[in-house]
Image (cartoon, rainbow, N blue to C red; front, side, top):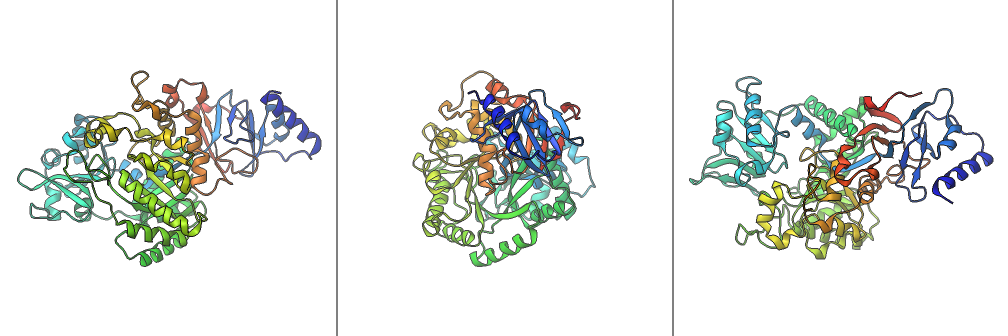
Length: 565
């Protein structure tokens, strides 16, 4: 019996043995429903009642759910999926960046110059020019200079963060206001790039960024709320119904709470509260627990805690097992000792926090896994699911440990191709042998690990379809031919859809609520313009989300979707 006939038979059987169903609020029919539910993987129609899925099955079967007031949408064969989960994203800071000097669109030095010059014409004469989003490879060695920024912003102080958030570009005026000179020492866990004379050259790494950032005017609660609303509007447009705010300070957490109180939160929001790794662990747990209690409200769940284990390879701040090729005996630094990380993991887990770790280098990944292994031995893995995000460079011996420990592997798949970050900054610092172990998505998937996915926006595009395309092809988004980068690490589309749906739901500890399309689950549903499985791999990102439903309510609708009945 074919799958379609089975669905029709099941629908007829239900109509014979049950009371007529309550009319649905909304019906989606004449569509390809990819449910990500192994018990019922494909269907033609969905009914939604009171924010929940009340039917998944055939077009014939859904007719019983259509009443006089039911909104019926004929999708003409378009694809329906569970809402996407982004397990590592920065909607607030990214959204604020959009309202400042936004360098994210810049792809060349000329673009950077043009945008910064235009930014310098806005605001009062003594205002800071602030913003960010520039790509490090645009500048030689990933090191923009103060002299270049002085030529664009000669009078006002300027502070621009890099797209990855681990470097800042400042001008002479900003350095002067912050009191930075050749005699200023590098702060702990940070680096001031210097010129030949030893003076600050204009690029600050990691904690050194704070030496200047702390001198800028503080943002207001309105700034944070406006940034969040910009970021979440973009998320809804891309079909993201659940997200993990990857680094929530107190003002960021309270922006989510405010948006929820105002009825303006279009996504389920898991907040990873930023851990001060220098603080006393017991005091820090007390602070985080109080913030969790204060910020919890409705769709806002501040249930995670964020720990930065290291920096990034491109800036030479990721923690490696073997030294960088361009810096003798230097392996980067861990942001906190392994012993303190282990203590924090134990205490956070005991307090009911999901631990969300930034780990880029192979040493950072190993230390994080070691800490989770120690914690798991004490509680037998009964606590919340912990996450390691980014996971760029692996020692192969650690790949199987994610599955063994039940740790979520959260990749940012859009980074897994040979762009200028990889070719100009990453591979030269690692050498060809180690570079074979960059973003081993296929090997992690084959190991049986729970795999989720995220964007790290505004570091890179928030669009899950773009990330899926890169993971499937290991090519840039504009490349339809050519040699895939590390082609053995390509994965199939099914794997990536699962990572962005059910994998994300499990990582959020709410797979009973979302992640698949099944009767009784929340109606977090998206409509995609085309059947993704029918597209050539290099065209996946050409599709777009036309409708995003959260609890059955439209939080984004494209005008191309057409009328309803």
